[in-house]
Image 1: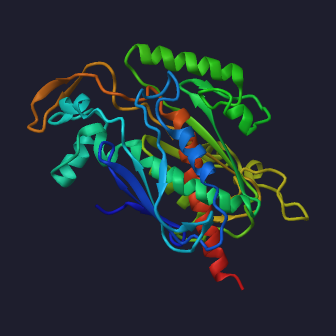
Image 2: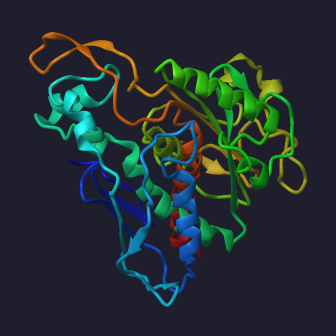
Image 3: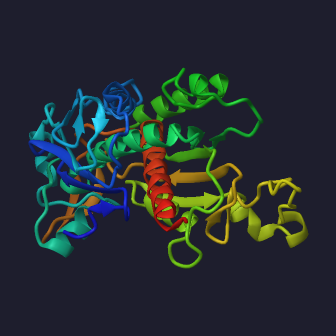
Length: 355
């Protein structure tokens, strides 16, 4: 299977399936002598792990990372970092009904047709379980980037039709204060009520995550195919259930005039507005990078659906198993991790060409 790696210099390769013995990865390209806080890595995994609340999957995993190489006495050695996360709370029997039947809008059908074989237990390689590996790499990337003044704020700004529209002071404390990871506590309560209502009906719902990257210097990204916004988009769209990505003004730019959209330049080379979202011509311009990621409703429902078997016979697919009624709150650390991986990779790429 191709396509299991991300990055050019700071590179992550992942492996494993949802109900295999473990998932894991290899991180290459991290410079030596970088101080690595193992507890901070685990804290990021704890933000992503299932079973956190009534609005997430009931699967219980400790998601304890085991670092196998590349870190010694709390510092990176410059060699590949190998790690695994063991799968413990697997209930493969809950997925036997999926062995020969496809879930509508899930990767079941495409995997079967592409490879001629698939691991139906929890979705196998197509499961979002794999994203825990991305969180490990992202946690390491964030520690390195924090040392040079680059930081991340990521939060839920929409669930269903409920959207954060008022301007508020967003802090990490406010984001982590509720299970929806929305910085507006009143809206978060409405979001949680909506998700629980959807869950009670055996249905699912989607939403959006807003990301802000502060402290990015001018010059990250390449002007043609390796644009910074293109690589961020690729990273986000590789996350399970993501259906949309925008930077800065995004799709709103289509209804604006150039005189409205242009970010006028100050004498210190900052801009008076930030419709560009911190990226111009595929290269960071030193302003905060704003982006937004849209997630679809999870395909696996806890209600019966019409489907077909591998032989094309119509069948009623029973709704069972353990799944999130809404993946968006647990996806916040994943989105943040992917952004950090991309930014660190481009930072190291820029250092390699700077005189």
